[in-house]
Amino acid sequence: MVEIAASKHEVGFLGGGQMATAIARGVVEAGLVQPHQLAFSDPNRSQIARLQQLFPGCTVVDTAAQLFEASHRIVLAVKPQVLAEIANGLASYVQPHHLLISIAAGVPLAKLTHWLRTERIARVMPNTPCQVLRGASGLTFAHGLNEEDKSWCDRIFRSVGTVVHVPEEQLHAVTGVSGSGPAYVLMMIEALSDGGVAAGLSRNVSLQLAAQTVLGAAAMVQSTGTHPAILREQVTSPAGTTIAAIQALEKGAFRSTVIQAVVAAAERSKELSGPIRKTEARD
Image 1 (cartoon, rainbow, N blue to C red):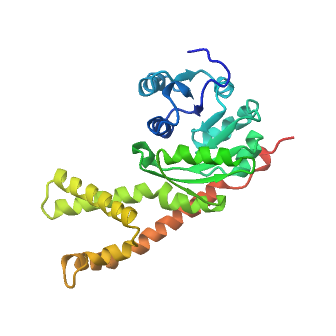
Image 2 (image 1 turned 45 degrees about the vertical axis):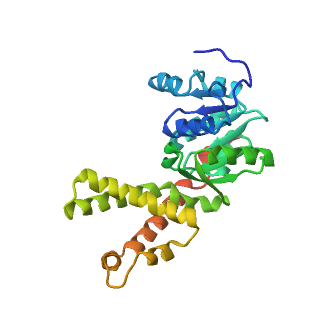
Image 3 (image 1 turned 180 degrees about the horizontal axis):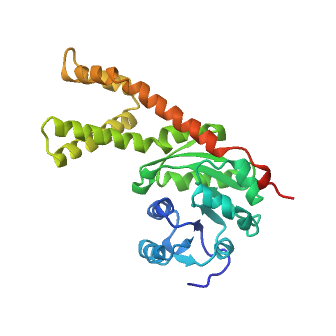
């Protein structure tokens, strides 16, 4: 491991998994940070070589204490249950200059500020397409962040996709739409591809067409700003193939099922966030 001086690194990542590397890739490609300004701490030794290959010149440290000493902006990129286990220990490393960004799903700001003893925390709900710089992230802030902090957080996540700013209570809905949403869309691509195979296409051809169709339809919504219902009407001819397909989708309650899926995910997010338990309270 490399010895490091205090405040040498622009961004530190507690955790070096897929989301951490996606965010790091985004900030580097956007020119916000150079690879040598990145620091990582990850207990998985097999990750070290991968991180150093992806970000030449970055630093991988042994401990969270070293990470906090070396970085003034730190992304908490560990699983929620892991963060719950280590948060009290992390609190002893947090200094007033630290800006913390949590991407731990379902862990509310009330818990984060309580555990880590700081109000300088942003909470983000990103999604897996951040890995290809096409993510969608919901962003909310604790009271201790100034406008410069908020702007920096915004730039970080815009480097990996789209950002919306919402009150924290709406992050549950963000989770239902975009956090869990890639799974619904991937199921749609899978089903669309299966339908192509059932209609006589090869698997490879059908999958290519299905994936590009979903990508193209999404791009139309984004580039035109037109409501998807209007775009759908534009390809729905009287007594044509599209209306026949839509009739089959409506018979299967397609839209209603998707709506129910979003609401179910949002409700589960609320359940997982939960209140601060008495066992989590400090003296």
